[in-house]
Length: 254
Image (cartoon, rainbow, N blue to C red; front, side):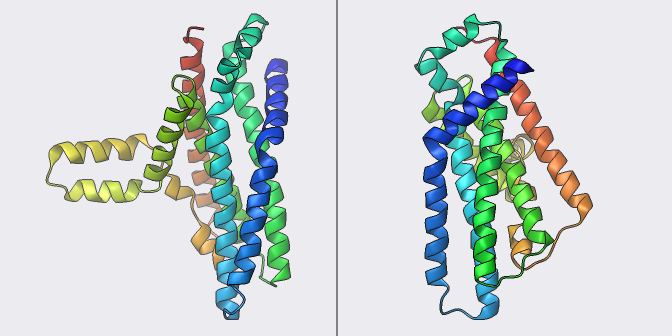
């Protein structure tokens, strides 16, 4: 556990140094641009769009961090050859992967917390009501980021950074279209295409189940049973992927 904590802390520090400040500047710029665009809208439209676009900005920025930092967690150590030094120490490969994942999870948590604070200040400035629904949406956004990070980490254990990014982005997009894939597969007359779409439906995470930004933007919270089940689903999927990453990395030759 001590080794995991050390690796997680080092990963957190490195991520902050390399990426996070730039993403926070981007997020702030998006909010400032949003305020200009909304100047002439009515009160109700103004409130809804500020909330909706703010949640979308948190989600988008977090996904960018999760993918592009996640794919470099392992490959950066290999490219720098620091992985050989780490492996020479009494640190298991499983601890290495778990520490990397925990470090990026901490990075994402801090990043989302800061963006949420900026978002809440923006809502206060525009006198937009803040209810439970907004915090529920941000909570599920964070769970989605944990899943995306796990996907990126899994692919990074056996493929290049470029291929890992492409595969992770592809699964992220498909993950928001799984319900549509199932519906199209049922209507498809081509058995091969139907089998492929059904396979993607069952293999890829249903990320759309973690998306409640629409209802949250108009102040409609979801039930606690849905919130718990959706969170458990996302965490379970992430746990399976991290376990798979540990399994693959354990058998990789250096």
